[in-house]
Length: 292
Image (tube, rainbow, N blue to C red; front, side):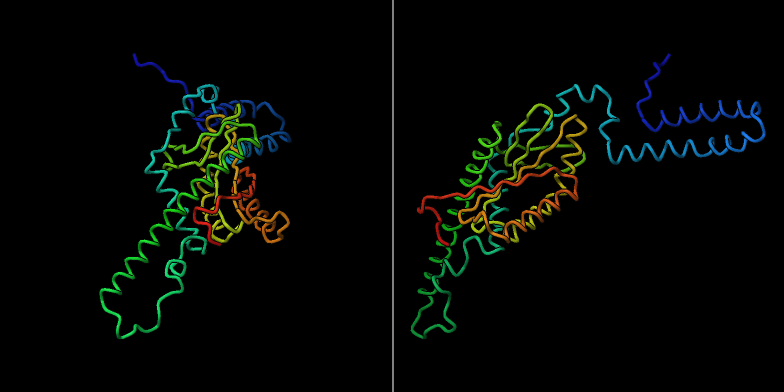
């Protein structure tokens, strides 16, 4: 004889409950007076619809109350989704950040490499060999500047994560990968756990504060963080996202930066992601990519 399994689907439980109510109500109906029967019939029709609407409202706005106690108590459901990223994955992430910064004019540019750009016309005495040597020199300089900027970006991330850890009194782990069946792998700059709250750190390096590339990149990442938040809720964890901006030339009284910060928080609220913004001025040594 096969073993009967426990019903776990909330919709199935609602259907069973509504069905029993309907059958019981139909049995009671003949015993009621004629005046009460019309009201009772409306109740029997509306009650199942009300239950289904209430279920989907709960599913949309407060889904964590539907989880079984075992889902909350089993910490393995949460920690098995986290792992350490490889150096190659970390480097690839930094390169993406640098590429976005270059699009906004923050990275190494051709003008910086070329020392004023190419002339409109090449002197007739210039040989092909000289042109090739000049091109090779510029390519080497561009590669060196890009590498320097990558080093600067990594140092800025470490600085921002260290400052955030000191501010919140939490132990952040850097380079954490989050894996889940219903979403692609996601890399976090930093992660810390405080009881039932997961603190995620997203560190952005910007020479001039809240640039358009920083805002655009963060806005495109919010959908991802919403999925991460929902996954954490399934394991009984709340999510707090910390956007850390490391900027050497940041001014605390800058009106434009204040407006940009308010805009970022508004976008995060629209996705239901609890977000806090931290700005840390960073005074660097002038030896590494210290051009304005």
